[in-house]
Length: 62
Ligand code: F3S
Image 1 (spheres, rainbow, N blue to C red):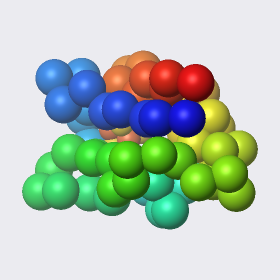
Image 2 (image 1 turned 60 degrees about the horizontal axis):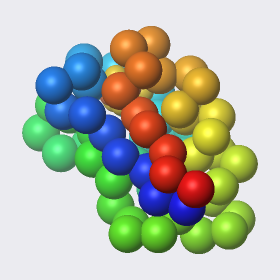
Image 3 (image 1 turned 60 degrees about the vertical axis):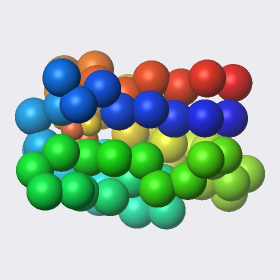
């Protein structure tokens, strides 16, 4: 599984970082993805982060 943050959409609310710190970090005022492949144990929180992002900036590729 891969995750992506669209920097054009991200408003820097940091919810994804709180939801899933193993995958997302803040880089200046936007979130970015730390890992090339989302590790098994972080897939649940990664999906949650996608669900919860208020501007739908997160996309997931299975
Ligand atoms: Fe940005 Fe959405 Fe995360 S707005 S900081 S990608 S929850």
